[in-house]
Length: 250
Ligand SMILES: [Zn+2]
Ligand SMILES: [Zn+2]
Image (cartoon, rainbow, N blue to C red; front, side, top):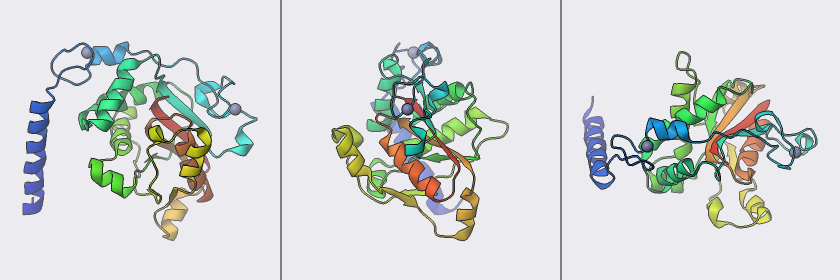
């Protein structure tokens, strides 16, 4: 271990220690000590049972796949969500704390929840996972990309014997967009996101590695699905065959 990495490790440990003091590990729901979200509260959260087409939202489809009439107009092949915001308030609250109070540890239970529910679908197993990227400014401000942490936690519990590869160097967010929660209206959101993503590398090997692949795009939440759709559009232009959004809550 060189000096830089040992200083970094010490710094991170201090950070964890401070986080423990400021946010003692207590379950946000039942207040039991030991974890921010305990196993029994995680198990008790109602899983989403009915899934609809992410675009028209009126047709019930298996695991949230895009319906036949919406498919020709969109890039995304579906959005699978583990829970619904309305039914699983504990999960909605956990996501909020994970994202806005920077409690990274919540990636583990949320990723496990996503893996457990996604493993019960018959969506095609992806060649790799792609976390939805943050703009570098926001990434620096927050210190981590929540989707990237989620994707790693997801991969380690989805097929632990043969973990999926997380490729967080494929997509880059080239436009600094307003947080989705603050930009109202579907039209405004769409305009805000137009061409917000691109493929990071022009390297022909990277291009080749995307050809005809199936990708699961990982994110914490989906509201209109506009962000996932923009990512899917970018990936498909680069030769990817199938793109599914896999999110914790919708
Ligand atoms: Zn609990
Ligand atoms: Zn539809």
